[in-house]
Every structure is written in structure tokens, then in C-alpha cells.
Length: 259
Image 1 (tube, rainbow, N blue to C red):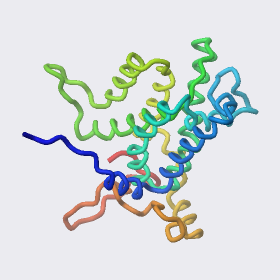
Image 2 (image 1 turned 45 degrees about the vertical axis):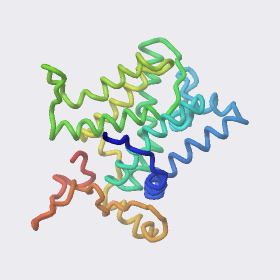
Image 3 (image 1 turned 90 degrees about the vertical axis):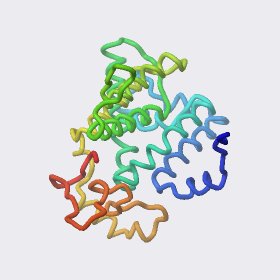
Image 4 (image 1 turned 180 degrees about the vertical axis):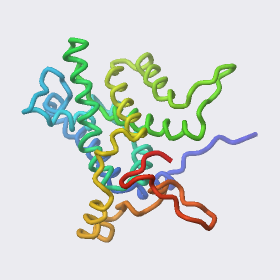
């Protein structure tokens, strides 16, 4: 009789200790803010994304809302879903790129689109918060990469495009989980598709600038678990070849997106 896989706390401990720097910082910020909202419940109202309250004086909402959560279960499920996706992203693109994107445009872009849709299209004011918008953003980016090597998967006689997987998950989540934002998740997924397709790669600083910053501040030497733009866990330009040959280069200067 085949035995069921057993939980190994040593493996979990080893996995946590191997997490790259920015992933640690963002996950720690999510947990810390959840703890802070217990005595300071006003933090949720202050940092949540409420479309009617978004203006030039409250732009912090667009950056903070993915870090805030309604309750413990909301927080822990998002942390469990986000951590492996965020870790993979940071190992592929580096700590500086991850920090720049997830403290900037990966919050402001989907949050801004959601705010505009709620205000001017849906004429609503639904408040949202939570890192699930990042989860679907990263799932969409991964689905686009997988689509290039495996365009379809089969369910019975039907062939379904691989890139649609996150959209199916968005719909299932909206039906099965109460009080989730279908529009918010779609906004996150949309930015993920744009990122993986290369349309918003201009948001990342040029690689020469990143190398200069890393060298000037000696970040690789000073910061434990820091991932340099030149480190290749998954590969800055894809997985390195195992046979002798020329290392594949990006087709144009800057960040390469996709496998």
C-alpha cells in the first residue's frame, strides 16, 4: 500500500531559510500589517483601496492595499499562494527589480485600473484589499510563459489554451469564495499578461543602471539572500544550456520577459 506524503518540518524550515530577500520583506510586511491591525483597526480603512477616497492626497492606498487583509485566514491563504510565485519571480528577475515593481507599478497599475472601472464604469465603490491581486498577476505571467512551450491542455475532448488558466481560476474563485472581487482579480491578471507579453517592460530600470547600483552599494556582499541581476537561478535570459555553446542573449537591451 502506498503511503501518504508526510509533512516534514525540516523541509519547510529549509525552504523558508532559502527565500530571497525581497520575498521575505514583502511577506513579513503582510504579516506585520495584519498583526498591527489588531490593536490599530483604523489601518484597514486608511490603507484599503476605496475608489471614492482615492485622490492625489491618498495615493498611498494604491501601494498599501495588497499588503492589508481582512482577517487571519484571508492573510494566511494569500501568503501561502503568493510566496512560491514571488520567490520564483525574484530568482528570475532579481531583488531590485522585484522590489521596484511590487512597491510601485504592480500595485498602482491594477489598483488604478480598478479604481477607474469602479468609479466611471460600474458606478460603484467596492472596497478591496489583499495580496490575491498579486497572486493572479504572477499566475498570469507564468501562464503566458507556459503557453509558449505548451499551448494547450486537454479536458476530455476539449483543448483549452494554457494562457486562460488564471482566468478560469479567477471565475472559480469568484463563485466559490465569498466576498472576493472579480474585477480586482481581473485587473491583476491583466497586468500579469501585459508584463509577460513585454508591453510594460519599460517599467524596469535598464540593466546597466541596476548593475551600477548593485556594484556601487555592494548589495550582493552586504545583504544576505540578495539576488543580483546577474545571478541565474532560473536564468536572467532563461535556463542556461547544459552543453557547450553561446549563452542566449536578450533580443534587445534591458529586461527579458518570458522563458
